[in-house]
Length: 300
Ligand SMILES: [Mn+2]
Image (cartoon, rainbow, N blue to C red):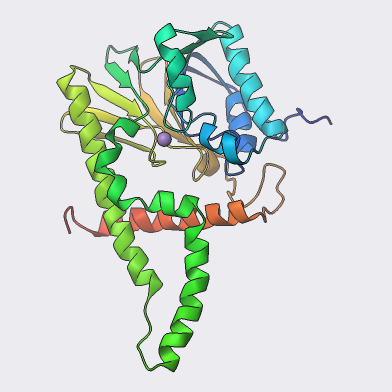
């Protein structure tokens, strides 16, 4: 078995369009193993890469690349070579691509565009944009950014010692988890503001819906009369948005669909690296987030 041999076999599904974003290739957090499996299992006429595909910020500091990252690139290029319409809309982590965009550059059949448009088989017009232009509405409560830096793991450790000292000095215990719950509540509100801002912009511009990524939170819902479609990410969750041949849109949760574990790699081995531990913590936070979203009424 060589490096590029698939570890498991999935049935191939033909879609009209596939949308993925926030793969963050070039970082350890990227689940390139699962992403390669997903890409190998689909065929499509349109492949939209909705930003933060190759992590250029990280590229300048540290760099992580293995055969799975290679395989993902190979599969994307294979789709383009096979005649699929492959469009790359850069995000904020691959914004170095943006300076080439005015040139309308096409690399190996992959078209670079600041934004893209797509008409579904049933005639709905979609705006495709990464979404970071609306960052100002979420900037103030981004627990995701905090987690990305490993600050959460550090904070848990610090909290333990912090409370030992507090108790010794006669102060009551300070709960990190209560603080995190407040943060999660803020994050839920921020996500809501992000969704509303993108949907409103798309509606003003006459679109029926908007496809985006950026906040690593897959979602498909109507927001003020416009479809808000977030294809999620391949770091904290492994999700994609797909369009069937009749125009029906669907979110694919690759981990849930294949009963995989984010704590294990594609070969079924336990993942023990620090970045994967942080990832597992962020999965728990995401679950707490969902819980908060269903328990807390809006503005609560
Ligand atoms: Mn982004």
